[in-house]
Image (cartoon, rainbow over all chains, first blue to last red; front, side):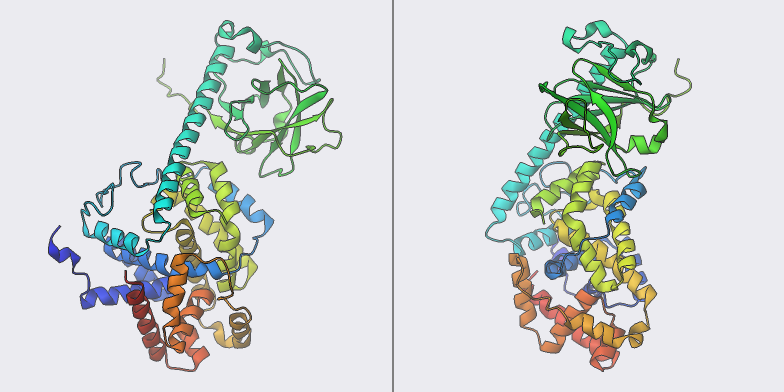
Length: 322
Length: 181
C-alpha cells in the first residue's frame, strides 16, 4: 500500500461521494440514475462508496412500518426462482477465502492490504459498538452452526444415497429391519419388486425434524410418476399413523399421499395429476394422525417431519457413457 | 425481525441454493421490504412487483453480500429501494403536480421518528440528522422515506431545484462528517 491510496478526499472524490449519496438517497432523476448505475459497474471504488452510503442511510429503514405483502407474492417468487442458480458461496470473515480483490485480512486491522480493505476496516471501526465482540462471536457460532447443518445435510444425502443403492442394487446389504417388506397398505400399493429400475432413484427427499436424523425417505420416479415412502427413523406410535402430505406452489394446501406404515414401502403410482416441475419443487411432510389417517382431509397438526426433493443423479448421463 | 447474525447465515445458505433458507429469509424480511417499497410507490401492485424483483435479485446474488460492508437488512433494503426508485422515476417522473395533496398527506401522516427499536448505528445517524438545519434534514428524510426526486422536493418546498440540490449536498456532507467514516 502506498500513502497515496489513503488520500481519498480530492475534490473529484468529494463529488463522487455526494453523487453516490444522492443515488442512495434516491433524489436523482432516471437519467442520472442510469449514469450512476453504469459508473457502478465500471468503478469498484465508486461501488464501495455507494455501499457505504447504503449502510449509513439504510439504518433509517428501521423506522419504516412493516406491511405484510400479498399472500401470493411468495408463490410467484418461488415459481420465478425455479431453475435460477444463485451466484455461489458468500464470503464470510475468516471462513472461506475472499474473492480477489481485495485480499482478505483475517483480522481487519492487522494488515489492510488495499485501499478498499482500509476503507472497510474504517467502516467497521466507525460502526463498532459495545456489543461488537459479541457480534463477532455470534457470527462465528452461526458459521459453525451452518457448517454443522451442511454436514448433517451431506450425511443425510449420503445416507439416502446409500439406502437406495442398497435397495435398488443390493437389497441383501440392508439390515434386516430396513429390508423392503412388500405389504399392501392402500389399493395403489404394489410390490416394491416391481418398482426398482436398473438405475438409482433420481430424486429423494429426506424427511427430518429440525435437521435431526432421517425419519422418512421419499423417492420419486419422474418417468413413472411413482412415489415410494419409507419409514426409517421415526418412532412407532401405538394407535396412530404417520400420514404423508405434499405441498407445492400449485397446491399450497397439503395434499394427502396416504399413510406410511411401519416396515413398509408405501408406493403411490397415481401422481400423474402432478407434473414434473411441481413434484420436484414440492415439499413433503409427515403428520401424526389417528389410526386410519386424518378424517378431515387436512393434517391434524403441524408437520412432524419435512423435506424437499433433491436430485441424486444427473438429469441425463452423457451419451458416450458405456 | 431476526437478529442480523441469523440473517447472515440465512443469506449464506441462500447463496448455496438453499430454498428453505430463502423461505425463512423471506418470512423474516419481506414485510419490512414491502413496507419500504409501498411507502415510496404508494401502490400495492407496484410494490408487489418490486418485492418480487427484489427477492429474485437476493436469490441470484446473495453471494455478493459482504457482512463487513453492510448488514443484511441495509443490503436488502438497498435492493428494494433501488427497484422502487427506478419504478417511481419511470411511472411518475412529472406526476407530483397531479396529486400534491396526496403526497403531502402521505409524507406527514406518520411520524417516521416514532419510537421503535433502535440500533446504536441508527441512534447515531439520527443524532447527526438532529444537528442539521431543519430544511436540510427534511429534504433528506422526505427523499429517503418517500423517494422524492430533487424536482419533487423543489415543488414541495417551493424552491428552485438548485436550492434543493444545495440543501441535499450540505446535509449529506454534514452527515458523513458527523458519522466520521
